[in-house]
Length: 276
Image 1 (cartoon, rainbow, N blue to C red):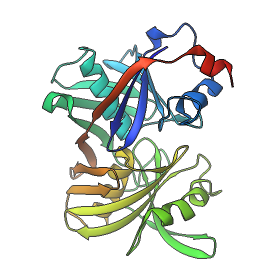
Image 2 (cartoon, rainbow, N blue to C red; image 1 turned 90 degrees about the vertical axis):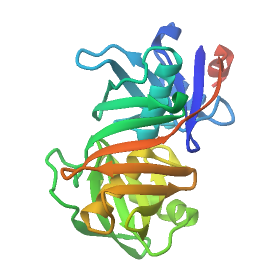
Image 3 (tube, rainbow, N blue to C red; image 1 turned 90 degrees about the horizontal axis):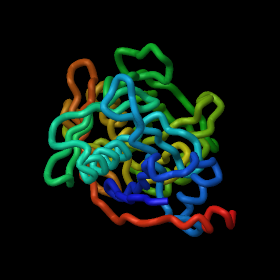
């Protein structure tokens, strides 16, 4: 099985083209491929391109636990770079169908930077959005948090704190992800406002765990910060892996701009899957 591996600010994905497979990937296959000891190792698999009736391309996104993600900002930037590397797109704008909705993308800087129109951010996990982020309370391990919901096609829980670090994300992220009030689980962002144009976030990603960077998390956190009046509509989101820029219009349609780097291409041996 041929594969390509990329990272977007340390968030790494494996791209697998369906035409390179003799049969679909099983859930066990996905888990093994993403495993950093038994497989190639990644934060997920981008399965595409596939045909779409309404878009230029269609994409499926799988987490390391084999659950399917509705949308991934970093994954979409990586997939866009893959399409560019395969000469399937140029520097013109193109569209991608995901489970979380349609996005537009444009590759720039010789493939090193990609802009993605992430769609309209909703301040809810429901189908009908709130016009502004609404505060709610949550008690985890004896600690009370004020949180805000957001959806970029996938669910997010945004929490503002004066100080954040990796330890906080790892301590509280798993419990919040799986809290009963989130029936489909949730991505979690711990946010520190730096100034009107910058925030810092630590991320616990649904189905993947602690993550160095996330495009959809950046979009959700920046949108909530802007909705609450903490930041202006052009926001740089600082993460352990690097910086993503989020631009918002008055209706909270978000455009994400960030780096992508190619790591390697190769052949994955069938015996690695047979051994599991």
